[in-house]
Image (cartoon, helix red, strand yellow):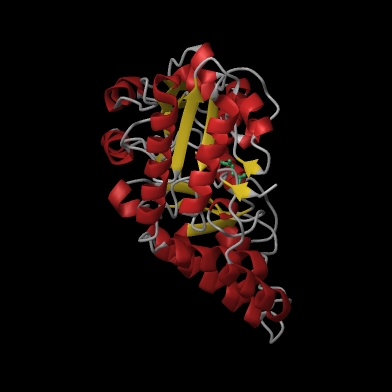
Length: 372
Ligand SMILES: Cc1ncc(COP(=O)(O)O)c(C=O)c1O
């Protein structure tokens, strides 16, 4: 069976350019980046070049980039780091109902430690209302965390408006940009954010590396204490191979011109599905304010998992791959008020740089064969 990969929001393949950088860095960067001799220096150069490249994509200073193990660690660092930096004081956090578990689970953990968390609702498109954020902020709010774009439905949140509201109250603003980096602009200055998480494997770099942008002056307690790596913010000897990979991937991601092709393919796919299935397919997510690669559609009255099982060779997701195996309605669709008979039929197709028109047409035809 021909294999077609439409699950780029779960993970992207390694870009060939990134693989080439990794191969070289694995050999040339074997030393400890903290060693001041000839063995360590090439490794340090690779790490710092990677940091400059990440900073280039985000539009920040290299010193504001902290390398982590991925999106989950970056999110945990932002939330717990903000909480522990104010240990012993009352702490309130504002987030949304549609965040990734890498935000919601640390929030629940912090609630056990005494934090109060407000989970903002979303409308039927998955968007929050900035006015709800304004009303939620109180005197002891220590952090607002709103994802840039949703991993399941692709809805893009009004981050600049939300960050401005947090800023008016002097509250640091974090955004989880794991899904938006490389798909839409993510300049921290334009968005007005203080903290931003990114994940390597969503942007054609490998798993095991990510970064947190920490605006100068924002105070976070470390999660990993040890020697003074990463400016004392995250202990552990840096991997030249992984940091160079993330840097190379960020260099490639800065060129968003290819996303117009991806958006056109995604829209072609949606039109093909509407032509074939009419009112039996429904779009989940915002019709316009949505990641250009993401198409989450419900086959009404069907089970997404059953359809995917018959779509042999096609890699896509029901709900999100991070919570695969679950048969209940996805919490994101539930928060959007999607009816169970619609939501249970949801499939997320997420396209990528290498997706072709022929692949899209083949999947649409295969779906007709299964469902009509
Ligand atoms: C929006 C979002 N945040 C965080 C993560 C977690 O990133 P990682 O897998 O690098 O830990 C993901 C992964 O699916 C994601 O989609």
